[in-house]
View 1 (cartoon, rainbow, N blue to C red):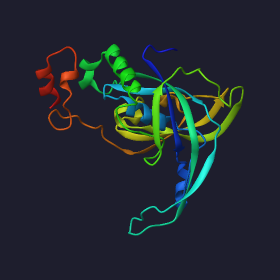
View 2 (cartoon, rainbow, N blue to C red):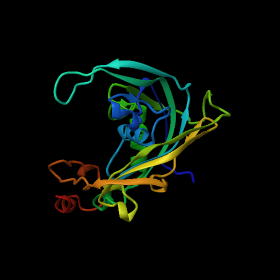
View 3 (cartoon, one colour):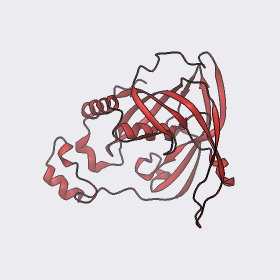
Length: 248
């Protein structure tokens, strides 16, 4: 189903590190061959995000050949000093991403902000400016850049190829975005069997991932007017002063 509030963008950078959790046990970090759903969701939220909406990543197209490069790093140890580790990065990456947003049904306090056209137009403007926040490709040391594009434009080295990347992390479900009743008030990790067809990775929706595990209890972030929330002027409709009393 095609959604009316889609954005399409190109994200690229010299390096990326979408860490495979299994590689961390020995102090090393090795990147997955492709970005995770959660990493692309974070990039999209860096372009534009409000608690009123939830971004969903529909598709990702791999535009450069998958290459890796290992670097010797000296991370800080918890008990002081430095250690020596090798991190394996993806290099010269470029992806084309198609994403759309839906309302966050768990955030009833922001119902007055549900203006689809407003959020879509702001998201497109922020994309043209390179995003509201810095873009990172997996980790902070991997700077990324975004710009609008047409998803199907250009050629991919994987056009006409189908590849399987095995079971990998899809992402985390936080309590304020949980759809399944049994996962509300919990933090859940999701995994999936990643497939690329004709150079395109089509992600399942978070609630459709079959492999999932609850990690721990967690609370929704609270937005308190005057403390960590000052955006009432952006709401449309309703009594803003009345809303301030209800939110605070």
